[in-house]
Image (cartoon, rainbow, N blue to C red; front, side, top):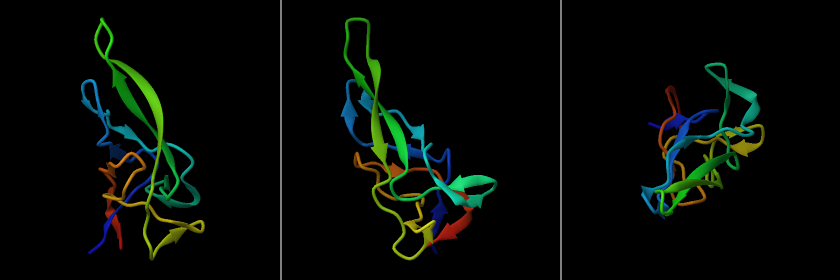
Length: 108
């Protein structure tokens, strides 16, 4: 059985450590495939961008600094718009993974 397909607004978890633990989970937001839709949202593909909020220590407490992050690896078998489809558990550039996809659609 495959993993849930990722789409615009699918969440990712970054394992990179910062001043308050690990980076904050943020959705994938750009550009995603405009040729394939899942529940009316653009499907996620390898290379899609998101941000990680890296919190740095300050006297007033940790302050989040946005850092770019991308989907590093997608499906070897399924392509959307010529790019590997992104799925739940696929790797992100900072070492984390896509943590939440759309469970109604699973791909290998």
